[in-house]
Amino acid sequence: MEDIFVARVMSSSLHTVSPDTLVEDAGQVMLENDIGSVIVVDEDGGLEGILTSTDFVDIVAQSQPKAETTVSRYMTTDVITASAQDSIRDVADLMIEHGFKHVPAVDETEGVIGIVTTTDLASYLSRLQSPSPDE
Image (cartoon, rainbow, N blue to C red):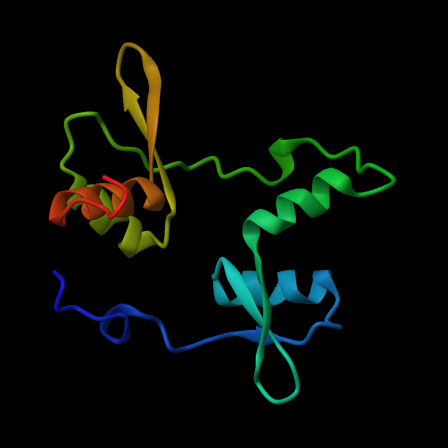
């Protein structure tokens, strides 16, 4: 895997905003394009920062006054799940096919028993190929 370079796997179709873009507008760009981040650039296209869906968690949590909206208004209810016996390849394919970053793992008797994330898969792949420099 060492001979596979970033250029081969990276996405080059970027959605950018300027530093003075309203967060609501940046969020709309992310929703309309089904992406998890926008790159913040200056007028010359230089990197200024990145705004991610995780940043929106902070935005909502720190908003004043607090919105009195329950999660039921925004949550996904038709959740696609995996079982503990599913192969990670199948789960990865599912995530790519649907654009998911999180897949809950469920058991018929115990209910929700875990979750598989894109970070879990990247971490597994990193350890599988060769030890990380820290190891």
